[in-house]
Amino acid sequence: MASSHPPPKEVNFHTEPSVKYIEKSHRPTIAKRVFETLNARYVTEPMLTEAADLFNGNYGIWGKDPTNSPRIQGSRVKLSRDRLRSEYLPENVDCFYAKVTIEDHFAGNAFACRWKVKDKIVCWITQLVVHSNYREHGLAFGLLNCLRRDDDNIYGIMSSHPAACLAAAKAFSSKKNTTLFTMNFRTDHLSGGINSISTDFIRDNAESIVKQSPIEYVRNAELRGKLFDPDNTSDVISSVCTNFFVDHAEPLEALDWVRQGLDWPLGELLEGHEFLYMIETRLRGRSRSRPASQPGVRGAF
Image 1 (cartoon, helix red, strand yellow):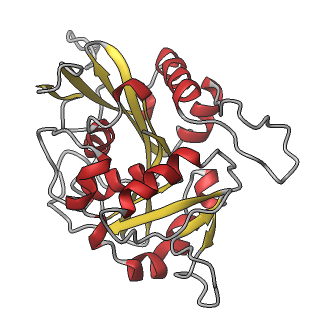
Image 2 (tube, rainbow, N blue to C red):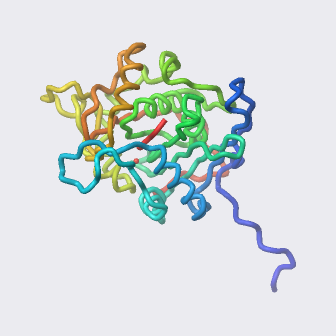
Image 3 (tube, rainbow, N blue to C red):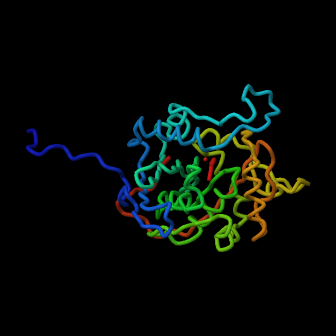
């Protein structure tokens, strides 16, 4: 017999509300911030079009490519809506999307993927982009903080920009924040969590974690640096070769700023390479309403 009640509406599996927090900032340029998180199945085509426009206008430009690629040096790095769907939100993979709006203006987003390695749940940030008009306001930190889950064991990110690694360290190496604060990577790195990085953990686990990723560019990345090759004579410590020849002028300028305040633990950045940051976290209590996941970033700040 058919029920007299309509079928329940399908909702996101997250126990947190989609709108994470709305806050008033002391800075006049940022009034209201709204953060949202969505399971991949709820990411619509208009959302991906919006995400592609954000990436294409704010990610970066191509650098010199020694592989004879047809990419034009100095032109914008671009991704289509369809590539975002297929490469960052593939079917039958545990993927998530976070976005932030400032006074109803789309200001930034992040993509993440989860998979299991043995009995550990890995959450990998696969893309992180903040609009150039809204950088240095803590939005990257806020987006990553939105993507945290209590049952995550390991977080990771690949990025050529040190600000992405600093934001990840601040978001993932401390207790989850329920209120957002302003973060300026030029100064806040002094109190961030990247100084607590365990290079031994990265050295011992990076290969097994990366090679089991369902995200192709993460899985195909080649580990580089002194952590993985004792005979390496360069100043590279923890990096991956992705042959992604984005221009490094802005990331290297940011790295100079960071090094004024700390001994940067990930080493030098080579062309076609990205920094590799990973951290193991303490379980904070598994959510009863969210089962463990079953079955990596590129960032602009």
